[in-house]
Amino acid sequence: MRAAVVRSFDHAPRYEEFPAPGPAEGRLPVEMVAAGLHPRVRSGASGTHYTSDGRLPLVPGVDGVGRLPDGHLVYFVADDEAPGTMAEQALVDPRRSVPLPDGADPVTIAAAVNPAMSSWVALRRRITFRAGQSVLVLGATGNAGRAAVQIARHLGAARIVAAGRDPRRLDLLPGLGATDVVSLAGDPDQDFARLGEAAADVDVVIDYTWGAPTERAVPAVLTRRADRSAPLAWIQIGSLAGPEITLPSAWLRAADLRFMGSGQGSVTARGIVAELPSLMAEITRGTVTADAVPVPLSQVEEAWTAPVEPGRRIVLTMAAG
Image: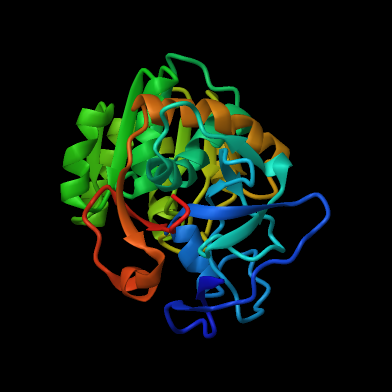
């Protein structure tokens, strides 16, 4: 089969011949239709994701839409040990797949589910989120952060504070449900003072940044909180600004601050898959939007480094569509 193939962690995948996956017990063959080029896919292809085992060559891709032998389309999350989804063929574990809703566009599903899944699962599986609560999305200008704003609105958030660095993307967020936007692109002292004022009394933080922004955001928010004993769930999802923070122990005593993560391991695969039908239904309805850019699989090397406009996501497409 033809596939995107990574032979060096320092180079973009190339379109090459690669052995097709052989039969496997409990797995079904699919002809791939579409696979999204997500940040998670990029980190896996560079060997930097926390699940990477360093083995090469590899086919990237963690999810996608495929056509089963009976002709039905399914969205699925690939097994960790299986070849990736950026190929003409793949294997599906039926326990990690769901049929596409009627009227769903495969390319849109491939673009939207992965970024939207992070906050959807976090707010529905990691905590008990209630309508009327308030949310801070830290790192709201990426595709996942943009989806988090829409999902928080859909789940009934009373206030949604969106913070990020890209001014063009920040400008789009009030139209998607953000009640407050805070730019983090200027003087850090001033920016995080504004963030603390806007997000002082939120109930939940969806954190895609970690690193220095989180180190500054924690005291900025907590020092302005009217009631520090009110629970604050800080859900760590991404680490765009760095994998580590320095957290003075005093902050854990001075407020009811509850750090947790949401991702592979903190939520079971079964739990994640159980959330997919309802999420895909909302994507199909347009509650969660994605501006997909379809690119043929044969152009993967060029697509890997191509600039992408704010809010858009590259989706590699295959002939099976």
